[in-house]
Length: 116
Image (cartoon, rainbow, N blue to C red; front, side, top):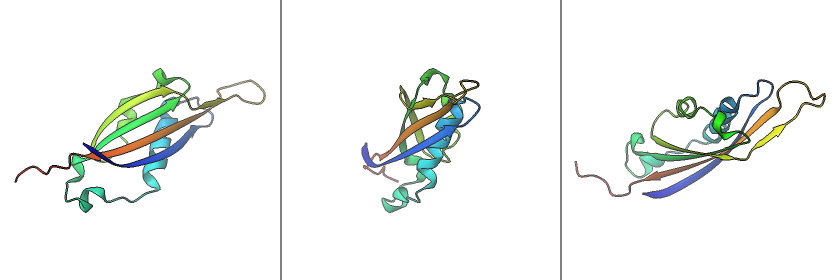
């Protein structure tokens, strides 16, 4: 595998305290800011993309990886969830904090094309 691209994103859950929603928004932030045609550039099908997704939030065990995986329209995804991101408490101390998630997406391909 050869990594060809890394993109970054940030997402939030403003009021619900939803770590999965913040992670999904961070993935969308990384994906939606780019129109990258790596697969076509190298003559591969989009399904050949190998995407490593690194997510950082304050409570990694509360991220539903299967729900985040649904954001990707193609490719094979691998997830790593780390403690990080940021929880911002409400000024009055009541309710859920604002959740901030950070994501790094790395896209790789097996650069040896299979024989047809």
